[in-house]
Image (tube, rainbow, N blue to C red):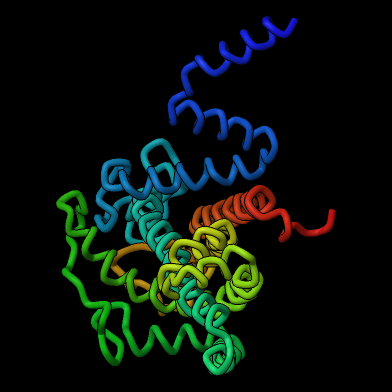
Length: 332
């Protein structure tokens, strides 16, 4: 019996380790079985990114090309999502508008995560006066009304040629975005929105990161690293950051849906990316609100797209929270 057990152990050790892609596939299948809503959110996120990247080729018509003989057409075989007041294909404008949704959503969570780790990590690790001064700044940061702070940032920085500083200036883009100019057009104007949203989201994340760092720095291995003469930078990079990364990923995933909704809100209010380049919030305002009476598709299409993305991203964030950091899991 002992010989057979030893042979089985040796046979198990001799089996080749599965390749990385197979482990990723197995992990994805396991995640989908455990968290079906989270898998749904991940699928919507991937589809949205694919549509945004290939939008110039998915769009059936140039997004700014008018068809004056086909104004306010209901959805049909020629215009899948109908047309607007100038006869522009609404499906093409929705597809092109997904670029801003992806850039603003992913860009905002990256900026917010970076600032949260920087501010919260420094505050929690060094403590003392540094912690006191930083936390008072964060208190003011989160006390200001978010929408007021966001509109102030966008008004000062500018999302086009407007604004006090006009940082959103970029190249013009023609009616047909397949020439590649749309990348720079969207990047410059989205960067202002991303930076502004990232600053606002980072205030709440900094507090959570600080609490995690305060708990981590009391561990024995942190004291051993200090005793061996490791510098503060080395300790934070090799010991603190890897331990808070699951928390940072959870914060980013949870904020993704809120970032998409915030970008749509500022575009609806007229402070986001300006026409002629379309965004979902802008379409909901200029087409749905103004011309939506009797032409419901102008409101339903962008509103439904925003709803599905925000819901799916929130479900993905909740699933990742449960998997990566069960301590943050709500009572059920």
